[in-house]
Amino acid sequence: MKYRAGNTHLVCPCCQNDKFDKDYRQLNTKGATLFGLEWENRDATILICRQCSYISWFMKEPEAVK
Ligand SMILES: [Zn+2]
Image (cartoon, rainbow, N blue to C red; front, side, top):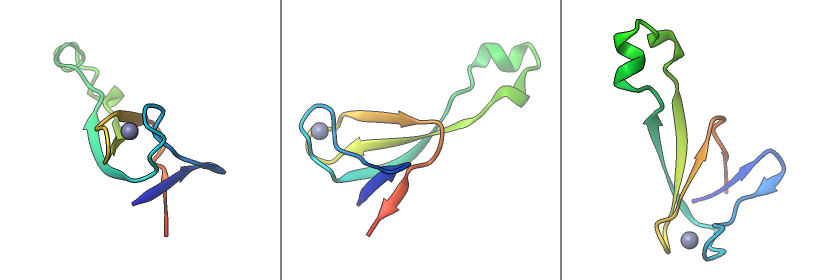
């Protein structure tokens, strides 16, 4: 799948490939949970380059381009 963030068509910074797999990762740490800061936990969107496996991180989910 191809994606864009805002008006920018996303390409891999390593290999210039423009096809990615999307996944999500939590940004929270065990330390934050221990101190009762769960409200700070957020999911980041990650795009994994299908060619070289480079991971790009986004706080705002990129839009899929058909
Ligand atoms: Zn790549």
